[in-house]
Image 1: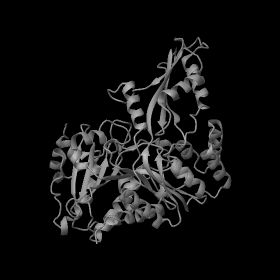
Image 2: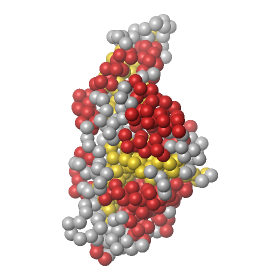
Image 3: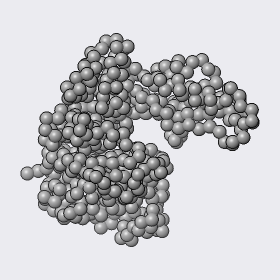
Image 4: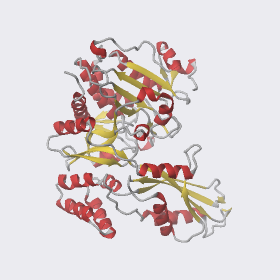
Length: 516
């Protein structure tokens, strides 16, 4: 494993890293952070007052620019910040550099005080990296963590530094009270979750003993609000992620001088093909994983027309009727894009590439589409066959699985891996961790139904799921549709009062693992 040079360890990403931490960075373990010898092995020491405030924690995290486009971000300064906070309470900490300079995973462990042979650790799976921004389309500095009108703005406030902050503030409140837990609590802030080659799979290959756990809580399910954007309506704990593959649509045409425009231009052929595909969606498929969610939504909504459409969709025996009812439910939903994604595979156009000179009409043009797959849904090949049917018999169009950004994996390997994920069993709901999440949600948001659900996106939980370890997902703050759709978008933000609600929720969840 490639180390970090002395110069980079001293000054990384424009921020100074203390010399006392240098040995820990190079060796992989933070020096001077042995576990405290508190009663029963519990961490001793008190967190700083600001570390009990989820807003201050969120702002501190957002101010580190950890963004990247798949090449790995500058995450070491962020990890050093976390190391200092956990070191203050006597927790074991470790920074594990990746081969990419300036990029690292952070692990902290609060030792449990339960009897030998007790529950395996609970791992809080967080990620430090974020996607890049279209800075010119933001109304605020995306890394200033500006507070405005009851909101905190910034890249990562929603996904997922705000969640990290709620986890951390809630955990530290227990520590501040002298709590002892019946199991180890592991806090992992991973890098390369937003794509990249040194994510949790890389970490698990070399350091599994440090992240082995009995259960995992990470990002995932949403607490949806009613029309006022504040009052919670429905809470979902995700028990499985959708997976994805990228598809590549390539159009061929004549290459010639741009002074001779021709009707078989590759760019025009591609654009017309994409227009045809824009009207295509895979059929509605209410899998056993998604059914409890839509049943709960039908009961929770105060829109009788939406409830009726959902019940028709759930009861349909004909695919056409199911599609019509599902499409109507999406039109009526206050969260249309979320609910569309939970009832079917979805396809999104993400990248287009063509041309290299202004005086050349290029002979090829390419579009990359992201296909998100519902566990238990139809195979990838079946979706691609339907897409080819929409495209017609144009032999100048080629649709295939793309291996861009997949390292050495072939398209065949990517398909095999994705198909395998389609049949992975969801996490069970009869565990102490799921019950703790359910109980905490019901205590925090009285009268709000709680359901299991698939997650419409993906997380870095694969190494644990592959080993049969239950993983549960939750963004612990209530959100409206506008907030949700800013995820990976512009002016990302989270309500400050929702951050405090999230911390109260997670405090109640962790209380279930606290010893008397």
